[in-house]
Image 1 (cartoon, rainbow, N blue to C red):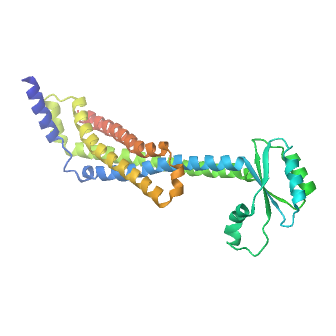
Image 2 (cartoon, rainbow, N blue to C red):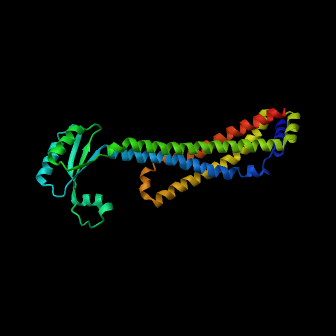
Image 3 (tube, rainbow, N blue to C red):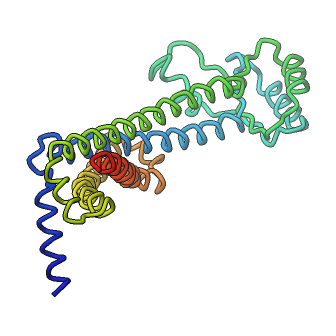
Length: 287
């Protein structure tokens, strides 16, 4: 009997404090989808960019390219290769064949370059190669050779990557703040519009926790639907990007897919905290 009375009381209270007719509350799902999608794609971009940078850094840190004049003799090249093998930190030194060389210069000279191709030496190195000895050997055998050591750019590129990641993290943070403010304003406006119904519920014995729970359940229902939609759209967007640019799939690890789905869920938690906090403040003020 008491359970039946409590159920009827809860249903009546829910109807009295229903936000369904509130225009802003009805847009909560749409806002959750849009902002959740932004947060999910931002997190995926942050992790994907980190993987791109790690792969690029690994390649650049382990290779040095040496460009020789086209008329360099095979004997001098062989002497250079043997000398470089004795340098501390050098694991391997080899001359690239013409096909590999053509693939490297194709973006600059086209498929059928009229100029003779340079000779390129690919050197695989460890973390700390002896550049002093390396440069001395190169200057002795091939004074006009050019060295392409992309590791010199690693610090600059690293700063750029971190800046982009901070921007993505900042955008995600802004999304969370905007969503929390939107929910807080919606809850406050809705409860103040129903101040009379709220006062009646409090008069007949409704506790603050009971009222806050009613509000929280309404917001949670909308937030879960919106978060599910945001996660689905984020995953579909990631899939479409992978189909349009297949090379991106190399950087779509499992953590990227999880981030896409997790961020909208995390946004739901933020929404719930904001809704409960706003509702408790308004309810306490009515008393």
